[in-house]
Image: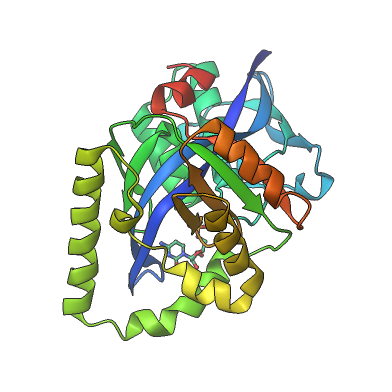
Length: 304
Ligand code: C5P
């Protein structure tokens, strides 16, 4: 029996542009992923003598099901390489669910990274990437973490240089947004996009990335928008209010993450973030203090 413990960090999207719907049903997108300090905790046991059983124990009992993405990650990897053995997962859930913070995807990636260290012979990274993409569009990003551009349906990941640590305040109201439904709501407006408009969005995204990488700042004027805000704010106006409250509390940038419902604000110092958190607390929903974490910190969790 081998055991490993580590963290599965959440992500935020520093902008998310949704383009056309593809023939496989997914939408082409452009985004910048960034891992943050809010994280689930996992302990993973691997017993090479078992015959493929994967068990999950979670402190949120409703998540401890056989279709949990972490369970499916372990099953998929064992099956993909024909490894024998049983896996037992202990998951302490800290990342809100259905919030656009990638918690389920990060747990799945953590399973792949942990099993990579425990299986013999060791799985190749290419196999991990393939299994990750089959599990969900955000899972491949979490194999690397840090800051990265996401293309395709999100599974094509291109690392960006880490930037200085940013202090964040994160608001996670008790609103569960289904990613599939959010895409469905966007579908009509995306179908109307002409090829020229799509190209303009792509060009704008690229220019903004280059500009923000060169300046090393999160200039709000240079940050691409999150296209999901238009449809999700319409359905849940409280989320727009949270975004405005974050800006009023001094955030230089405030934006919804992914398809929501979490909204984050970027602050220039820990003190300002702490003050904002105080103001925002007690208005409803969970308010977290967090910070961006870079690739090396993510990778330290499960080893090379
Ligand atoms: O890939 P993942 O399982 O996270 O996606 C959940 C759902 O979101 C998909 O079934 C699809 O309906 C939608 N989606 C999409 N385009 C993407 C990513 C997800 O339409 N790029």
